Image 1 (cartoon, protein in one colour):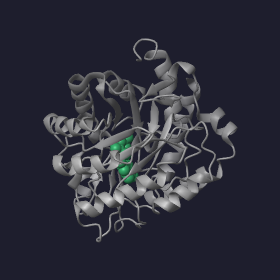
Image 2 (cartoon, rainbow, N blue to C red):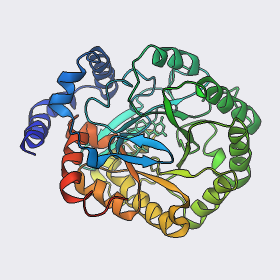
Image 3 (spheres, rainbow, N blue to C red):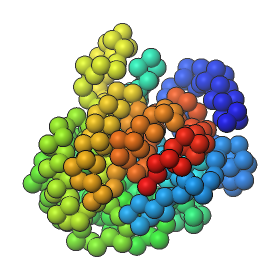
Length: 360
Ligand SMILES: Cc1cc2nc3c(=O)[nH]c(=O)nc-3n(C[C@H](O)[C@H](O)[C@H](O)COP(=O)(O)O)c2cc1C
Protein backbone atom coordinates (compact mmCIF):
# COMPACT_ATOMS: atom_id res chain seq x y z
CA UNK A 1 0.00 0.00 0.00
CA UNK A 2 1.25 3.44 -0.91
CA UNK A 3 0.60 4.72 2.63
CA UNK A 4 3.09 2.26 4.12
CA UNK A 5 5.69 3.00 1.45
CA UNK A 6 5.48 6.71 2.33
CA UNK A 7 5.67 6.03 6.07
CA UNK A 8 8.63 3.70 5.56
CA UNK A 9 10.54 6.19 3.39
CA UNK A 10 9.82 9.05 5.79
CA UNK A 11 11.04 6.97 8.71
CA UNK A 12 14.14 5.66 6.96
CA UNK A 13 15.29 8.88 5.37
CA UNK A 14 14.13 11.55 7.82
CA UNK A 15 13.47 10.15 11.28
CA UNK A 16 15.87 7.19 11.55
CA UNK A 17 19.07 9.17 10.86
CA UNK A 18 18.17 11.41 13.81
CA UNK A 19 17.11 8.56 16.08
CA UNK A 20 20.19 6.49 15.24
CA UNK A 21 22.46 9.40 16.12
CA UNK A 22 21.21 9.26 19.74
CA UNK A 23 22.00 6.62 22.39
CA UNK A 24 19.78 3.56 21.74
CA UNK A 25 18.50 3.25 25.27
CA UNK A 26 17.63 6.94 25.54
CA UNK A 27 15.62 6.70 22.32
CA UNK A 28 13.87 3.56 23.51
CA UNK A 29 12.86 5.32 26.74
CA UNK A 30 11.62 8.42 24.89
CA UNK A 31 9.58 6.28 22.49
CA UNK A 32 8.14 4.26 25.34
CA UNK A 33 7.02 7.45 27.10
CA UNK A 34 5.56 8.92 23.92
CA UNK A 35 3.90 5.61 23.05
CA UNK A 36 2.31 5.29 26.48
CA UNK A 37 1.19 8.91 26.27
CA UNK A 38 -0.63 8.14 23.02
CA UNK A 39 -2.66 5.23 24.39
CA UNK A 40 -5.86 7.24 24.43
CA UNK A 41 -5.47 8.16 20.75
CA UNK A 42 -6.14 4.63 19.54
CA UNK A 43 -8.33 5.83 16.64
CA UNK A 44 -5.53 8.09 15.38
CA UNK A 45 -2.85 5.40 15.67
CA UNK A 46 -5.14 2.89 13.95
CA UNK A 47 -5.83 5.21 11.06
CA UNK A 48 -2.14 5.91 10.52
CA UNK A 49 -0.51 2.54 11.12
CA UNK A 50 -2.91 -0.36 11.38
CA UNK A 51 -4.17 -2.72 8.69
CA UNK A 52 -7.26 -4.72 9.64
CA UNK A 53 -8.81 -7.52 7.65
CA UNK A 54 -10.74 -10.48 8.98
CA UNK A 55 -8.84 -12.70 6.58
CA UNK A 56 -5.79 -12.24 8.81
CA UNK A 57 -7.48 -13.60 11.96
CA UNK A 58 -5.99 -16.78 13.33
CA UNK A 59 -6.67 -19.11 16.23
CA UNK A 60 -3.58 -20.77 17.63
CA UNK A 61 -3.75 -23.04 20.69
CA UNK A 62 -7.20 -21.65 21.44
CA UNK A 63 -6.10 -18.00 21.40
CA UNK A 64 -7.47 -15.50 18.86
CA UNK A 65 -4.94 -13.39 17.03
CA UNK A 66 -6.20 -10.44 14.92
CA UNK A 67 -3.24 -10.97 12.63
CA UNK A 68 -0.11 -13.13 12.73
CA UNK A 69 2.47 -10.36 13.30
CA UNK A 70 3.48 -9.81 16.93
CA UNK A 71 5.94 -7.79 18.96
CA UNK A 72 8.59 -10.09 20.48
CA UNK A 73 9.74 -10.05 24.10
CA UNK A 74 12.35 -7.46 24.95
CA UNK A 75 10.91 -4.22 23.57
CA UNK A 76 8.08 -3.60 26.04
CA UNK A 77 9.73 -5.26 29.02
CA UNK A 78 7.74 -3.45 31.72
CA UNK A 79 4.39 -3.33 29.91
CA UNK A 80 4.14 0.41 29.28
CA UNK A 81 3.03 -0.17 25.68
CA UNK A 82 0.67 -3.08 26.21
CA UNK A 83 -2.43 -1.15 25.15
CA UNK A 84 -0.73 0.59 22.23
CA UNK A 85 0.87 -2.10 20.08
CA UNK A 86 -2.45 -3.40 18.76
CA UNK A 87 -3.33 0.08 17.52
CA UNK A 88 -0.13 0.36 15.51
CA UNK A 89 -1.02 -2.90 13.81
CA UNK A 90 0.39 -5.78 15.86
CA UNK A 91 -1.76 -8.89 16.26
CA UNK A 92 -0.15 -9.68 19.61
CA UNK A 93 2.36 -8.25 22.01
CA UNK A 94 4.64 -9.97 24.48
CA UNK A 95 5.39 -8.04 27.66
CA UNK A 96 8.70 -8.87 29.30
CA UNK A 97 10.78 -10.76 29.90
CA UNK A 98 9.35 -10.18 33.39
CA UNK A 99 11.24 -11.48 36.41
CA UNK A 100 10.06 -11.94 39.99
CA UNK A 101 12.48 -9.43 41.45
CA UNK A 102 13.39 -6.04 40.06
CA UNK A 103 16.74 -5.74 38.26
CA UNK A 104 18.18 -2.56 36.77
CA UNK A 105 19.92 -4.41 33.93
CA UNK A 106 23.55 -5.23 33.18
CA UNK A 107 26.16 -2.48 33.12
CA UNK A 108 25.98 0.00 30.25
CA UNK A 109 26.58 0.04 27.32
CA UNK A 110 24.03 -2.73 26.87
CA UNK A 111 22.43 -1.85 23.55
CA UNK A 112 24.16 -1.06 20.27
CA UNK A 113 23.38 -0.82 16.56
CA UNK A 114 25.13 -2.65 13.74
CA UNK A 115 23.39 -0.83 10.94
CA UNK A 116 24.99 -2.51 7.91
CA UNK A 117 24.55 -5.94 9.48
CA UNK A 118 20.90 -5.07 10.32
CA UNK A 119 21.39 -6.17 13.89
CA UNK A 120 21.33 -4.92 17.47
CA UNK A 121 23.82 -5.76 20.18
CA UNK A 122 21.87 -6.64 23.32
CA UNK A 123 23.19 -7.07 26.84
CA UNK A 124 20.31 -6.01 29.04
CA UNK A 125 20.19 -9.19 31.09
CA UNK A 126 16.49 -9.08 31.99
CA UNK A 127 16.05 -5.47 33.04
CA UNK A 128 12.69 -5.61 34.82
CA UNK A 129 10.69 -3.65 37.36
CA UNK A 130 9.63 -6.98 38.84
CA UNK A 131 6.46 -9.04 38.40
CA UNK A 132 4.23 -7.26 40.94
CA UNK A 133 4.93 -3.79 39.63
CA UNK A 134 4.43 -4.85 36.00
CA UNK A 135 1.18 -6.64 36.92
CA UNK A 136 -0.10 -3.54 38.75
CA UNK A 137 0.67 -1.42 35.68
CA UNK A 138 -1.11 -3.83 33.33
CA UNK A 139 -4.12 -4.07 35.68
CA UNK A 140 -4.76 -0.38 35.04
CA UNK A 141 -4.63 -0.63 31.25
CA UNK A 142 -7.59 -1.40 29.03
CA UNK A 143 -6.48 -4.67 27.51
CA UNK A 144 -9.85 -6.04 26.42
CA UNK A 145 -9.56 -7.21 22.84
CA UNK A 146 -5.76 -7.15 22.97
CA UNK A 147 -3.74 -10.35 22.69
CA UNK A 148 -1.17 -9.90 25.42
CA UNK A 149 1.50 -12.39 26.38
CA UNK A 150 3.83 -12.43 29.36
CA UNK A 151 7.39 -13.66 28.92
CA UNK A 152 8.72 -15.11 32.16
CA UNK A 153 12.38 -15.46 33.10
CA UNK A 154 14.26 -15.93 36.35
CA UNK A 155 15.65 -12.89 38.16
CA UNK A 156 19.18 -12.12 37.08
CA UNK A 157 20.54 -11.66 40.61
CA UNK A 158 23.47 -13.26 42.44
CA UNK A 159 21.07 -14.84 44.97
CA UNK A 160 19.33 -16.82 42.21
CA UNK A 161 22.28 -19.11 41.81
CA UNK A 162 20.84 -22.63 41.84
CA UNK A 163 18.36 -24.37 39.58
CA UNK A 164 15.85 -24.82 42.40
CA UNK A 165 15.99 -21.15 43.35
CA UNK A 166 15.57 -20.17 39.74
CA UNK A 167 12.55 -22.46 39.39
CA UNK A 168 10.91 -20.91 42.47
CA UNK A 169 11.66 -17.51 41.01
CA UNK A 170 9.94 -18.38 37.70
CA UNK A 171 6.97 -19.81 39.61
CA UNK A 172 6.48 -16.58 41.56
CA UNK A 173 6.02 -14.67 38.30
CA UNK A 174 3.68 -17.27 36.79
CA UNK A 175 1.61 -17.16 39.98
CA UNK A 176 1.48 -13.38 39.80
CA UNK A 177 -0.06 -13.44 36.32
CA UNK A 178 -1.86 -16.75 36.12
CA UNK A 179 -5.34 -15.54 37.10
CA UNK A 180 -5.19 -12.22 35.29
CA UNK A 181 -7.81 -12.34 32.56
CA UNK A 182 -5.93 -10.08 30.17
CA UNK A 183 -3.08 -12.56 29.78
CA UNK A 184 -3.68 -14.49 26.53
CA UNK A 185 -0.52 -16.63 26.55
CA UNK A 186 2.76 -17.12 28.39
CA UNK A 187 6.30 -17.43 27.14
CA UNK A 188 8.84 -19.44 29.09
CA UNK A 189 12.19 -17.83 28.42
CA UNK A 190 14.85 -20.50 28.81
CA UNK A 191 17.21 -18.97 26.34
CA UNK A 192 18.38 -15.51 27.38
CA UNK A 193 22.10 -15.57 26.72
CA UNK A 194 22.79 -12.42 28.76
CA UNK A 195 22.18 -13.60 32.32
CA UNK A 196 24.53 -14.79 35.04
CA UNK A 197 23.01 -18.32 35.04
CA UNK A 198 23.76 -18.76 31.36
CA UNK A 199 21.29 -21.03 29.53
CA UNK A 200 21.01 -23.41 32.43
CA UNK A 201 17.49 -24.47 31.44
CA UNK A 202 18.48 -25.65 28.00
CA UNK A 203 19.75 -28.94 29.41
CA UNK A 204 17.09 -31.69 29.28
CA UNK A 205 17.05 -32.44 33.02
CA UNK A 206 16.73 -28.82 34.11
CA UNK A 207 14.14 -28.07 31.47
CA UNK A 208 12.07 -31.06 32.55
CA UNK A 209 12.10 -29.88 36.18
CA UNK A 210 11.17 -26.34 35.19
CA UNK A 211 8.35 -27.40 32.87
CA UNK A 212 7.07 -29.87 35.46
CA UNK A 213 6.88 -27.09 38.06
CA UNK A 214 5.18 -24.68 35.63
CA UNK A 215 2.62 -27.18 34.34
CA UNK A 216 1.69 -28.12 37.91
CA UNK A 217 0.27 -24.59 38.18
CA UNK A 218 -2.45 -25.63 35.69
CA UNK A 219 -2.19 -22.45 33.69
CA UNK A 220 -5.41 -21.63 31.87
CA UNK A 221 -3.52 -20.03 29.00
CA UNK A 222 -1.11 -21.68 26.56
CA UNK A 223 2.63 -21.71 27.12
CA UNK A 224 5.25 -21.07 24.42
CA UNK A 225 8.85 -22.05 25.15
CA UNK A 226 11.31 -19.48 23.78
CA UNK A 227 14.04 -21.59 22.25
CA UNK A 228 17.73 -20.84 21.93
CA UNK A 229 19.04 -20.08 18.46
CA UNK A 230 22.36 -21.84 18.21
CA UNK A 231 21.33 -25.44 18.80
CA UNK A 232 21.22 -28.40 16.47
CA UNK A 233 17.88 -29.74 15.23
CA UNK A 234 18.49 -32.83 17.40
CA UNK A 235 19.02 -30.73 20.54
CA UNK A 236 15.89 -28.80 19.69
CA UNK A 237 13.90 -32.03 19.23
CA UNK A 238 15.03 -33.24 22.66
CA UNK A 239 13.77 -30.03 24.32
CA UNK A 240 10.45 -30.17 22.45
CA UNK A 241 9.94 -33.82 23.38
CA UNK A 242 10.40 -32.86 27.03
CA UNK A 243 7.77 -30.16 26.65
CA UNK A 244 5.34 -32.45 24.84
CA UNK A 245 5.59 -34.98 27.68
CA UNK A 246 3.96 -32.30 29.81
CA UNK A 247 1.56 -31.19 27.05
CA UNK A 248 3.42 -27.95 26.29
CA UNK A 249 2.65 -27.36 22.60
CA UNK A 250 3.97 -23.86 21.86
CA UNK A 251 7.55 -23.11 20.70
CA UNK A 252 9.22 -19.90 19.57
CA UNK A 253 12.21 -20.09 17.23
CA UNK A 254 14.27 -18.29 18.41
CA UNK A 255 16.30 -15.98 20.64
CA UNK A 256 19.45 -13.91 20.04
CA UNK A 257 22.66 -15.28 18.51
CA UNK A 258 26.07 -15.29 20.21
CA UNK A 259 28.36 -16.39 17.39
CA UNK A 260 30.33 -13.37 16.22
CA UNK A 261 31.46 -15.40 13.21
CA UNK A 262 27.86 -15.45 11.92
CA UNK A 263 28.03 -14.90 8.15
CA UNK A 264 25.54 -12.03 8.18
CA UNK A 265 27.83 -9.69 10.12
CA UNK A 266 29.70 -7.08 8.13
CA UNK A 267 33.29 -7.71 9.41
CA UNK A 268 34.18 -4.04 9.99
CA UNK A 269 31.07 -3.63 12.17
CA UNK A 270 31.47 -6.72 14.29
CA UNK A 271 35.13 -5.82 14.91
CA UNK A 272 34.03 -2.46 16.35
CA UNK A 273 32.06 -4.18 19.13
CA UNK A 274 34.79 -6.71 19.91
CA UNK A 275 35.27 -5.31 23.39
CA UNK A 276 31.55 -5.21 24.23
CA UNK A 277 29.61 -8.00 25.88
CA UNK A 278 26.27 -9.03 24.41
CA UNK A 279 24.43 -11.00 21.79
CA UNK A 280 22.72 -10.14 18.54
CA UNK A 281 19.28 -9.75 17.00
CA UNK A 282 18.08 -9.08 13.46
CA UNK A 283 19.44 -10.51 10.23
CA UNK A 284 22.06 -12.78 11.87
CA UNK A 285 19.23 -14.63 13.69
CA UNK A 286 17.16 -15.35 10.58
CA UNK A 287 18.80 -18.45 9.14
CA UNK A 288 18.91 -20.49 12.37
CA UNK A 289 15.34 -19.48 13.11
CA UNK A 290 14.04 -20.56 9.71
CA UNK A 291 15.94 -23.85 9.80
CA UNK A 292 14.58 -24.74 13.24
CA UNK A 293 11.03 -23.78 12.25
CA UNK A 294 11.13 -25.94 9.11
CA UNK A 295 12.73 -28.87 10.90
CA UNK A 296 10.34 -28.77 13.86
CA UNK A 297 7.25 -28.50 11.67
CA UNK A 298 8.42 -31.50 9.66
CA UNK A 299 9.26 -33.51 12.77
CA UNK A 300 6.29 -32.71 14.99
CA UNK A 301 3.63 -31.76 12.44
CA UNK A 302 0.52 -30.16 13.90
CA UNK A 303 1.35 -31.41 17.42
CA UNK A 304 3.12 -28.14 18.04
CA UNK A 305 2.35 -24.47 17.42
CA UNK A 306 5.25 -22.37 16.19
CA UNK A 307 6.05 -18.69 16.46
CA UNK A 308 8.82 -17.70 14.06
CA UNK A 309 11.08 -14.95 15.37
CA UNK A 310 14.32 -13.50 14.07
CA UNK A 311 15.30 -11.16 11.27
CA UNK A 312 11.88 -10.13 9.95
CA UNK A 313 12.21 -6.77 8.19
CA UNK A 314 9.44 -7.02 5.60
CA UNK A 315 6.57 -9.10 4.23
CA UNK A 316 8.90 -11.44 2.34
CA UNK A 317 10.77 -12.31 5.55
CA UNK A 318 7.46 -12.96 7.34
CA UNK A 319 6.15 -15.09 4.47
CA UNK A 320 9.37 -17.10 4.52
CA UNK A 321 8.74 -17.94 8.17
CA UNK A 322 5.10 -18.86 7.48
CA UNK A 323 6.19 -21.04 4.57
CA UNK A 324 8.75 -22.77 6.79
CA UNK A 325 5.82 -23.72 9.02
CA UNK A 326 5.35 -20.90 11.53
CA UNK A 327 1.77 -20.20 12.66
CA UNK A 328 2.68 -16.71 13.83
CA UNK A 329 5.62 -14.32 13.47
CA UNK A 330 7.30 -11.97 15.95
CA UNK A 331 9.81 -9.16 15.51
CA UNK A 332 11.62 -6.30 17.22
CA UNK A 333 14.65 -5.28 15.17
CA UNK A 334 12.59 -4.88 11.98
CA UNK A 335 10.45 -2.24 13.69
CA UNK A 336 13.51 -0.32 14.87
CA UNK A 337 15.11 -0.38 11.41
CA UNK A 338 12.00 0.02 9.24
CA UNK A 339 9.60 2.05 11.39
CA UNK A 340 6.44 1.59 13.47
CA UNK A 341 4.27 0.93 10.39
CA UNK A 342 5.97 -2.43 9.88
CA UNK A 343 3.17 -4.66 11.19
CA UNK A 344 0.47 -2.88 9.17
CA UNK A 345 2.73 -2.93 6.12
CA UNK A 346 3.45 -6.68 6.40
CA UNK A 347 -0.23 -7.45 6.97
CA UNK A 348 -1.27 -5.44 3.92
CA UNK A 349 1.06 -7.63 1.84
CA UNK A 350 0.03 -10.86 3.56
CA UNK A 351 -3.59 -10.36 2.64
CA UNK A 352 -2.63 -9.99 -1.02
CA UNK A 353 0.24 -12.42 -1.39
CA UNK A 354 -0.22 -15.12 1.19
CA UNK A 355 -3.33 -15.66 3.26
CA UNK A 356 -5.68 -16.49 0.42
CA UNK A 357 -3.22 -18.99 -0.95
CA UNK A 358 -1.89 -20.74 2.11
CA UNK A 359 -3.02 -19.85 5.61
CA UNK A 360 -4.09 -22.71 7.79
C1 LIG B 1 16.67 -4.99 22.75
C2 LIG B 1 16.26 -6.43 22.80
C3 LIG B 1 15.92 -7.01 24.01
C4 LIG B 1 15.52 -8.35 24.06
N1 LIG B 1 15.11 -8.88 25.25
C5 LIG B 1 14.53 -10.10 25.26
C6 LIG B 1 13.91 -10.60 26.42
O1 LIG B 1 13.87 -9.94 27.47
N2 LIG B 1 13.33 -11.83 26.37
C7 LIG B 1 13.33 -12.60 25.22
O2 LIG B 1 12.75 -13.69 25.21
N3 LIG B 1 13.91 -12.13 24.10
C8 LIG B 1 14.50 -10.93 24.09
N4 LIG B 1 15.06 -10.45 22.93
C9 LIG B 1 15.10 -11.31 21.74
C10 LIG B 1 13.91 -11.04 20.82
O3 LIG B 1 12.69 -11.34 21.44
C11 LIG B 1 14.03 -11.88 19.53
O4 LIG B 1 14.04 -13.24 19.86
C12 LIG B 1 15.31 -11.55 18.75
O5 LIG B 1 15.65 -10.19 18.85
C13 LIG B 1 15.13 -11.90 17.26
O6 LIG B 1 14.09 -11.13 16.70
P1 LIG B 1 14.36 -9.78 15.85
O7 LIG B 1 15.44 -10.11 14.85
O8 LIG B 1 13.06 -9.48 15.19
O9 LIG B 1 14.77 -8.73 16.80
C14 LIG B 1 15.50 -9.12 22.87
C15 LIG B 1 15.88 -8.53 21.65
C16 LIG B 1 16.24 -7.20 21.59
C17 LIG B 1 16.62 -6.60 20.27
